[in-house]
Structures are given as structure tokens and as C-alpha cells.
Image 1 (cartoon, rainbow, N blue to C red):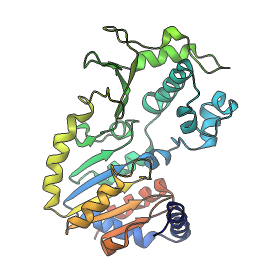
Image 2 (cartoon, one colour):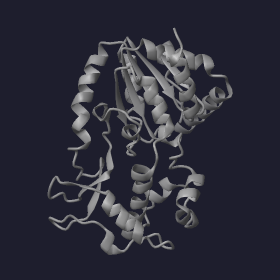
Image 3 (cartoon, rainbow, N blue to C red):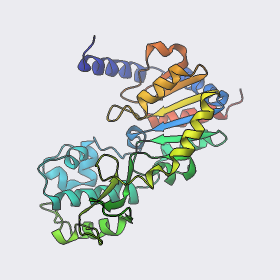
Image 4 (cartoon, rainbow, N blue to C red):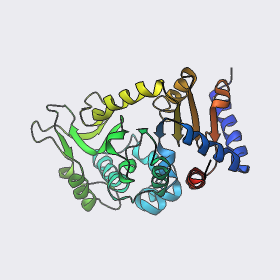
Length: 306
């Protein structure tokens, strides 16, 4: 049995091999599978947004967008957001800066519009672990996007004493205006509190025991209905930029259903982890290399006559 480190090293070698090869035949085959599919289940994660510059693991992005955090010694934004030594004032300053950058102010990432163009005539549903709202910004039907991880756009009571959800943007804007550039902290009075019980507000994200799922889960039933139909159809799982931060939500889920459903196929677009399970054989297609460029090429091939 291989160790986790050995598996990751094998993934890296395979990714480098695929990136070094001409993937035109692979993308032409992907285009054929898309055309042949009756239903397409899209799985989008951080790698899809990173293809447009929204890269939480990039030191270059941190230096360009959050230079104060770079000066404080952080290597990337993800490390800053999970720093256990932050004060509450620093935590909220970072949360506000991140939310304004990723959710409210970031322009539409071209990879999403390229993907929508590819799927424009297909029966699709999106399952995403992203909290940046790029699928909706990019023009996808909001009724066909399931975001079970929650939303940084909304705040809720941490107790919770009620099921009210508040628009986070006004709070984030106020905090951002007051951030001290040296300590990267906000005044204590800027930290939002529940107007009903006085408890601190938190982002409406899955994980804490206080999570209020009402808005997040509104598309759960439509997604499950779609999947019931997909089980009996010629279904394509189209996975984009899904790594190992939360592989159970999309990566492992798509692999398992492809294995269980005899008429299902899987296409995995991934710069770092494109490998697919051997047991899926020729029903799985790994695509490495630059995701944005791959979607551009795939779009052209999908427009070609059969």
C-alpha cells in the first residue's frame, strides 16, 4: 500500500507528463463525449477560479492583492486565513478583505464563460465547492448551481438565536475602510454582532455547529432530482480544478458514480492532479495542463461538425 506522499508524488509525475504532451487528441475526445452526453454534471472547485488568477495558494497573488499580508510574512492568502494566532480584529480584517476581493469585486473569470459556451445547449447541473459566486457571475442558471459549502456573501448569528441571514457586503465595506495597514486589523466596534441577541455574526459557511442551511440548500432537491434522471441516462461528469482540500464532495463522488453507473463517463481537468482511477478504464479521461487554455481549445472542438 502506497503512502499519501508517494501517491502525491505519482500524481505530480503524471501531471507533468500530461502537461508536456500535445493534448489535442484528448480534447477532441472530450468534445465528442460532451456532444454524446444526455446530461452533464459539472464539478467546479478552486482550480477553476485559480485559472483566472484567484489563487489562494499563490505568493504572487498575495503580494499583488494583499501586500500588507505579504509584508507580515505570510506565504499565501490561505495561510493568512488559517493563522491560529490572529486576533479577532485581524481575523475580521482578513475576512472582509478576502470577501470583497473574491466574492464582490473580482471580475468574471473567462474560464467560466468559456465553460458556459461549451454547455450552452446541454442539460447540465453544477455542483461546486467554491464560495466565490463565479458560476452565477459567469451567466450560469442560478437554479442549476448547487453550492453546499455556503456563502461568504451572507452572515448569520453564531449562537444562532434566529435563522436570519444578513448581506455581508455593508459590514465588509465598513471594515475595509477602517483596516489598520500595519497591524491589518479593524476596530473592535466594526466586528458585526447579531442585533437580536448580541452574539458575534459569522459567515454562513458549512462546518460550524451553528450553520444555517436555508439559502445554501435551496437547490439541493433540484440537484437530487437531476441526479436521479442522470443515473438512467448517458451522463458525463465534467470535473474542473478539484483537488484534495475536500475531495469527498466532488472528486471521490464523481469517481464512485462513474464506476456505479454503466453509462457514465468522467472527464477530469486538473493542472496538478489529473489522474483518474485505473478501474474506470476508458470511461475516464484525464486532462492536464493549463485549464483556461484547455477550455478555449475544447470550445473550438465542440463547435466542429462531427
